[in-house]
Amino acid sequence: MSGRPKKHSLTLRGHRTSVSLEDEFWTAFRKIAEEQSIPINVLAARIDEERGVTAGLATAIRLFVLAHYEAKLDDLSAE
Image (cartoon, rainbow, N blue to C red; front, side):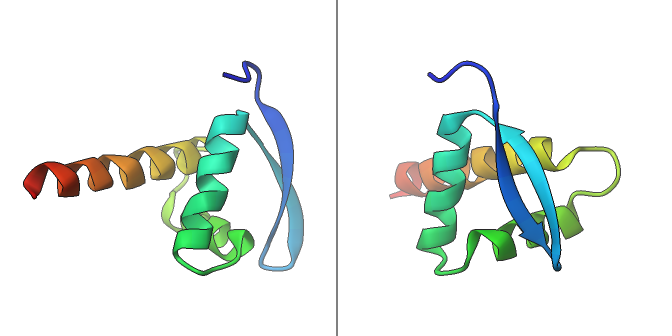
């Protein structure tokens, strides 16, 4: 594990921003975008739109990554 979160740059609807994520979450986030054949900035914008006001973007991305892989595990156990 990488330990401390690192800042990563994103562009959301034409505006530059950054999120602090651990390397493992950033890597998983990028892989999910690749699996869905969409740019990482598009995926981040979708998450940003759906997150509401209670969670920061980095937290929303972590929760999205967790939910994505939980769903994959559920699919595997249903087979």
